[in-house]
Image (tube, rainbow, N blue to C red):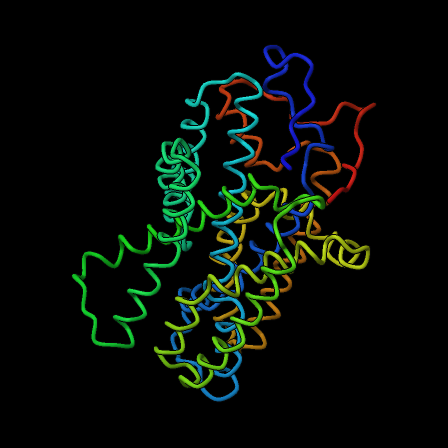
Amino acid sequence: MIHEPAHANPATDRTQPSNPKDRIVSIDVIRGIAIAGILLININYFLSQAGQTEDPVGTDAVIWQIVDDVALGKFHFIFAFLFGTGVFIFLSRLRAKNRSAWVYVRRMIILIAAGVINSALGGIDVLASYGVLALLLLPLTRLPRWAFVFLGVAAAAVPDVLQLASSLGDLQPPALLFPILSYVRTLGHMMLGFWLTGLGLYSAATRIPVTGIFVLSLLGSVPIWIWTTAAGTGSTEAHEIAFRTALVPGLMYVTGLILLLRTRFGRKCLSFLRLYGRMAFSNYLGQTVICVLVLPLLTGLGHISAVDGLVIWAVIVLAQCAFSTVWLRYFRYGPLEWVWRCGTYWEFTPLRYAPDTRAEPAAQS
């Protein structure tokens, strides 16, 4: 079930911050995990950009292979899946407020611009491509549900099958097809997130068999991990298998986290990521800035091992979690989220809490 904003007068209240009770906290937590996971994937790239050019060997190679097995492609899937979730919620609220779809178009154009800036800073960017794909997603939402679901599943699965067959087999499609397949794949992940959110994936009362999806994807992930391990530590084949089969463990992660967040233990253990996920836009670009500025200083001191790289990753994530917690104690949005919102609605939205209304948003699942 999507929580709709409880605004009495959308025409006069259309740019006010969403009521904290309207937020689906499990989405914020999972988005925070996705942002942390993407940095985990990218940290090795940032180290190489900072001057560390040696190929990992020995223990380092094993550790980075485990990171690939656990994270490569999986968190990109989750990020795209949640982007589809966000599109569904945003379009639902636009309709509830009787706002034009051009608001959505403007929102994605701003995201594309942010992605271009992130690339210019030296980051591995997905924001620009996500903005373009989200514009393509808009007309697809007008399709009949069966057509949308069929197209989404095909877009999510077929590119991986073709690219695996090309990498590990004799299939040789035209080279131009590969970048197109990558974008189609991401669009499919967004469509899955859009569709399942509409069915009530994040609601405790959902009819979606979340537990069943988790169990099936877990059973499917085990042979994938065995296959990846058998391909050889650090090999191109292992990298391809880990990336091209990410849909299955990615679904396991999403559904497993939803189930975990329905428990008191899970909410208590993962609650620190909630505000981190609410500031996902700011934290994503912030990761690029931190890595570009700080990592060259560290690599200049000597070789950074895989363990050191993981420590750096953890420090960045925890520092950003602390910053997000402090920031959102005084402000309604993260800094870039606020700019994005003002640009989206083309109207000024108050950033600071009023002195008598400032409060920690109430948690809910």
